[in-house]
Amino acid sequence: MKIIIGLMLLFISAFANIGKISAVVGDANVKRGNDSITAKVGVVLEEKDIIYTQKNAKVQIVFNDKTVVTIGKNSALDINEYVYDTNNPKNSKTDLNFFKGAFKTISGNIGKINREKFKLRTKNATIGIRGTIILGNEEIISCLRNEIIITSNRTGESVFVPQGHFVELLDKGNSVTKLEVKPFNEDALDRLDEGFKLEGEQLLKANPTNKIKRETVVPLFDNTIPIQDIAEQQNFEDNRELLDLNIDDKVEEIQENECTDPYSQEC
Image 1 (cartoon, rainbow, N blue to C red):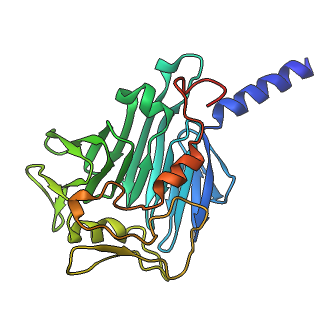
Image 2 (image 1 turned 45 degrees about the vertical axis):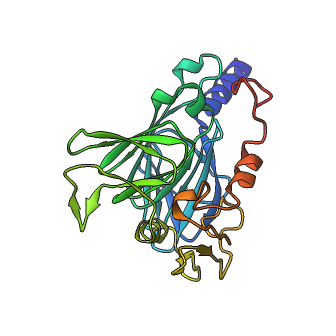
């Protein structure tokens, strides 16, 4: 009987485990029901957890399907729904609500197998993925690779956003009446980077020749997929890895075992 109970508890624990915190800088916590858990590397996350960061903090999460999420300073993520079912792939789904602050998402296996059930939400918009890398906040959402679909929560309007482009949701604090897809520009890049810029870091600078240079003054987040690095590109519209020069290497490190069946044990 004890063995059966032990196996049941092990099964429940495994089912509840949906991912882990892989990197933290500064003060952050996980709200689970009435409990508050200090965010530390290795903390196991569960569905319905809410992660909060303080004014000089950011957190990276790696989910079981290898989806990678980074939330910036003064931000919050509600893991509203997350199911990764290797036995029945069509049951897999993700619903993440970034209801405050800045975020970056690199989609994993669920985004490949069940795109229509991979949803990202903000205060002002809902994002459907056709791409793999998304960066945004409450005011602006951008696509860094492939394509995404953005739907305004206010008007219901939807637009396709290709890589290297963004959509504004707020203009000087007011909701926009019509979504407009625009190529990256200096102002948009500054606004996107601001949510991840911590004290002691200098993230993105654009010089008059339209080249982008990024620097890390103090490396505070070495074991995450960095927003900060050194990069130079000739043209905003030509940037394919606009906000992370090293992102391909880092994603490959986390998602190194690509295969035709993402649900196999070898992935």
